[in-house]
Amino acid sequence: MKTSFKIALISMASVASLSYASLASAQQITGAGASFPAPLYSKWAAEYNKATGVRVNYQSVGSGAGIKQIDSKTVDFGASDMPQTDEVLKAKGQIQFPAVIGGTVPVVNIKGIAPGQMKLDGQVLGDIYLGKITNWNDAAIKALNPGLALPDATIAPVRRADGSGTTFNFTNYLSRVHPEWKAKVGEGTAVNWPVGAGGKGNEGVAAFVGRLPNSIGYVEYSYVKQNKMTYALMKNKDGVFVSPNDDSFKAAAAGADWNKSFYQLITDQPGKNAWPISTATFIMVHLKQDKPANAAEVFKFFDWAYKSGAPSATALDYVPMPDNVIGSIEKAWSQVTDASGKPIAWK
Image (cartoon, rainbow, N blue to C red; front, side, top):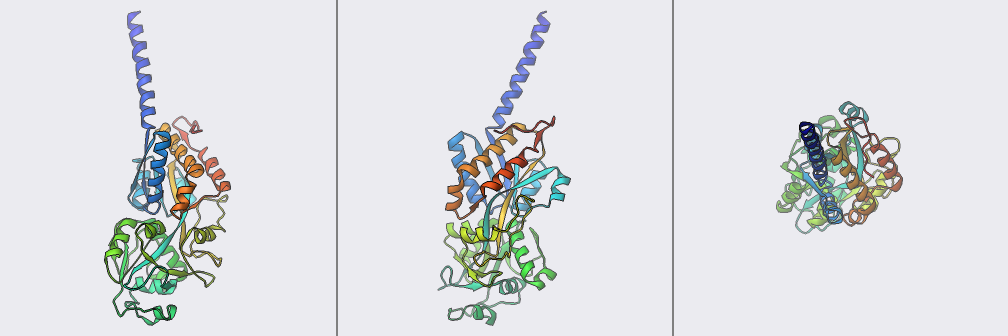
């Protein structure tokens, strides 16, 4: 009888220990990937921790590394600015959903030129990164910028050194508007760059351009604002030179059909106000969860972000997801289950 009682006590202690472990694990969740949304995720994490006590540890390591980490299950969620196709996700046993919309912005460091003064288009931008245009007073740049004092100086292109969704967005745009770029380089999180020095993360590119005279690079818009960088206007599909901001990012996303699929690319979209290098940034989770408490906390965090984090997103010039899209996202979460096949309870 005593032996049975001891076994029962041991069993109860084991269950309690497992329950405590699940509860403890849910007090911190981990994510890794895109540097594009990192300023916002950092802000959201701080606000969420203050509201709930739960810590969200996000590593800004680039979209390529984020995809690898979620594939290997070393994080609770991965993040990428390059959406994966529905077929790829199905093969991996994952789902993805958009978090916010933003824009990739060409930035320059040229003495005497202020933010928004320089105008560029896809042809010139592609030619610079192909190494065909090498000087700031090239005739093609002067034709877009009559009256602007362009220096007789060699252009120093800066690009990403790591696997990057920002690079995917940038090269996807160039592949749509520049046939030679598409044929010779193409698109991807990492490509064989004809020219340029590499910086790691949006942070690295921003720092590189900031200290290198006569340079050009591309970063997510919040890094432009944070670092007070000199951005260029871009000529869009309708032939209009537009500024990067939440309104032009929103205009680019207007035609996306999120209810059909979360795989949406919004570069080079029509609309006189559309920013041509816009993108959504995405979160990836596994359909079958080994740590259901952590998965529930991931969904709670993003539910809170959608419903309470919009002001922070807007302040950093990201575009929050529309309410009808949020409904579709949370419906998709119902597909995620624990090891026994029971849907994750996050509400």
